[in-house]
Length: 341
Image 1 (spheres, rainbow, N blue to C red):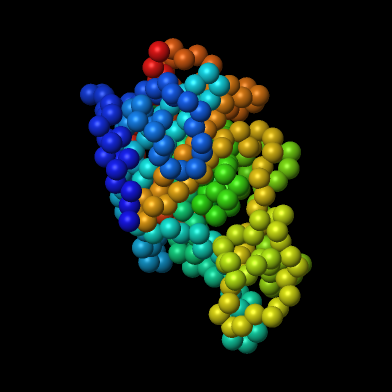
Image 2 (image 1 turned 90 degrees about the vertical axis):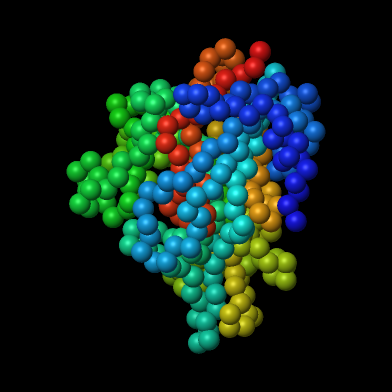
């Protein structure tokens, strides 16, 4: 059952919705915060903003059964070194089943997929959440994430053939800092994938969206040389998860029965700039609670937003993905973010 007490208690704190839009003020943390996706007493000091997520970029044509709308609450605290966030959104299903392998009756193996007309998944996938922080994109303050989202028109985006519903990229070398939490690929490592959006879109299949540099770690697909079956398996298959931690993988030996599954993702913690954002999502049976921690100032001065001036106003936007590869719930305009002094 959902833990009501901390949500009710925190709802009594400052509920910041400005007349001209959404705003959030980060309050000073009474003590360091453990990142576990659960409310400890420190969050009683936080302000809160509620964001209605009711926009979808497209309607999948293969029976999308995910969320059509949800509410997300955002809280923030900070200390002398870190800024903390708690993102909570309603989702009555916990989805981790990202393209798992399943043994067939004839002995072959198949990855379970149900792609829509854009060649993306929204059935066999994972829950995700994204935050866009404006670095210097003109118009972001007014339009939010919409500023970098370019929708397909008659099969073209900016004159380039594309079968997706839309792509993110900026104009004129502007930058957006992107944090993306992935329920299957990064949550077990207690990380949020740190990346960015820029204007270089011609050599990247994800267009303007790119990851920050990593030194090691990350996730990769679990398949053999001819991609006909898994290459690795869980060390303890009786304790099934939809991911394999790289440190615990074992060679795949086919002793499975028809209908049995093997994870299709192997994952390990990032090191380097891509690991700058710590985070863990806890699902309480009705909602996700994603707790996040990042240094106010990172080493990547170009691709990370720097919270170096606590008197400055910053702008961000949020999105929730319900068991979906690209389809997501988002909001219009940006959220104003400041630090309490």
